Image 1: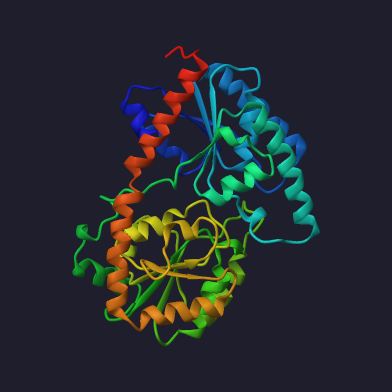
Image 2: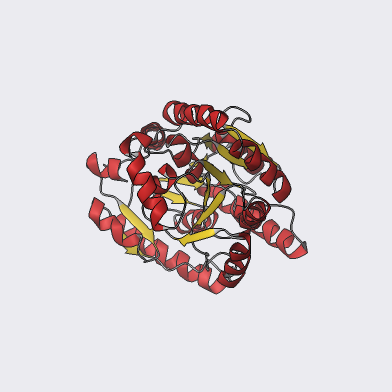
Length: 370
């Protein structure tokens, strides 16, 4: 968005209100509020959101509409039927609905979502952007989008200037640790995520309980009350306290926390391409994550980290223990993480790929007024 504004485009963000939404105006982006019910698939509320979206888009008359995540993709595809302009969908991961097999209710819901997504996407989206090949192949094989409209742009990118260990010194690392009662010589294992089940929060806490005397485990993030896969604050507090995990809640100074970290862990069940892993890589950290779609796109096993099976707290603890015991290996892996962040995942590369896609689609339609 910042690049589009800098290039002279009029940029609008249509989304619910909130603390993050308030920041759009600071960057020259006009925010239009659109309430979306994330907890249910209530048809009446969905219709109201689609109608509100249609009214906003009719006023803006955009040349490009770019939607992110499954539900906004569906709403945009339905709201823009018959309208001019290019429509791009981004699948930034399939979310908790697709993380694992689940029971009959989840299977039924997944089938209904697939039916609606396939109808809306095939009839309207000019391109569907995927962050990993697993999600792309799933969409194409299930006929949720046409193969010729699938595009692979790996991840959302990372700012390798903001996320660089060269910005910080050891004094800053010691100060942050001291504020939270963490010993200066402790090996710190950090996880940053929305605290929902499919991020592997339980497995992280299980690993911490198994290793509480060998390393210090830090959990950054808050429960996501708007997610069907949410964990209760009470459960997290109870289990994390018992395992000796330091919970710090939501933090705005993520680069500083990563600088104070020795090993980054994300035991997620499925991702698009996890941004926190890319940020940790840019900060020169070794990674332990799962052999799951999205996660394995960032980490090469044995090269810049270790991959473990999904939902396996014991295997996670074993991988963490392996790296906690070998500082020299952590340093080598961390160095390789930084190299990969700079060569494959820089945000500037991702921005250019998106702008190139916009230009190509606009030229194909031949109806751009801007």
